[in-house]
Length: 200
Image 1 (cartoon, one colour):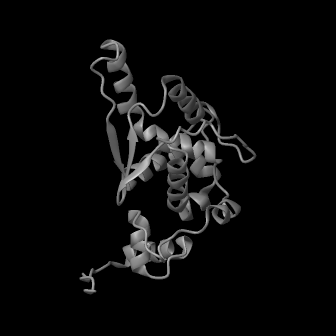
Image 2: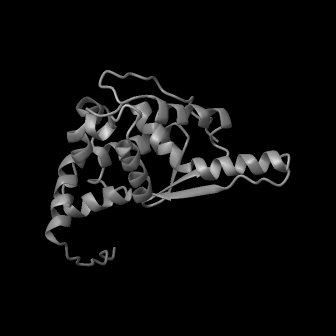
């Protein structure tokens, strides 16, 4: 068996510090495995901590808040498809795959956590330590959970995909309400928002 080709990379101090932190919280045994974990590539050592363990350590927004923030990354394209379906009465509106990179999703979730509600509070302000140290790892875990429930899929390394008709119009209304109307609160406990999708 031929040995895999290796490529040396150079990291500045800031990136190495961030990578060291991700290696620690993700349970990766090396920088290589930590990078694989960030890109969504499975290696024997790049597996993140078991979901149950992450939940025990979790001290941030409830999963419903996080799931709503993640799923809404696909809202614009999905709503557009629903509008086309209504206009063409379903005959010409073809459901399509919508790709989002891990970086896009994390950036969108960050913005949602930083957005002030009408009382001036933010999820970031309420859970500042979690926001700084565990946000990305928790997003990774919620992506895997949403994949298991049939909402999204890992189309390729570091890329997540939703089919444009995966979530119904009334469900988007619910996700918007959760994101925009529920105020940051430490004792908040919301059950799963949406029923899992049927496996194809």
